Length: 105
Image 1 (cartoon, rainbow, N blue to C red):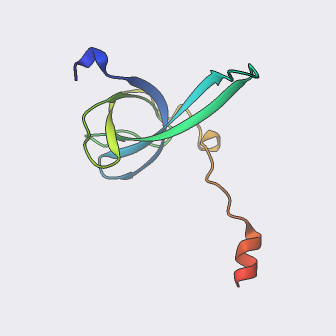
Image 2 (tube, rainbow, N blue to C red):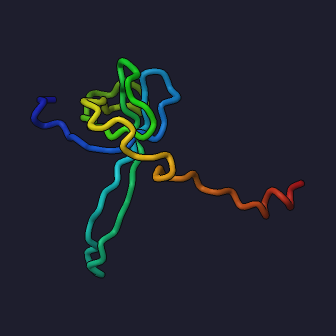
């Protein structure tokens, strides 16, 4: 794939617990085709970080590349900002309903 045809995305690192891999969350905004409301959607992509330089909260640019593993076909091109995003602004994990755990116990 030629370098000019590769997709580039900008996102925030939400996890760096894997070796040489980071999880980058990308937020996409688009207008709903019928209601014309601005909608937001997000994706979490795994990207290759060769030197493990990324930390949680970093703003990074990633580029599409050949498949490096089953889930990983992006690589970190550059770090745009170190720790620009605070931990409180990161997306939260889905909360498990406490009712389900109380009935099981």
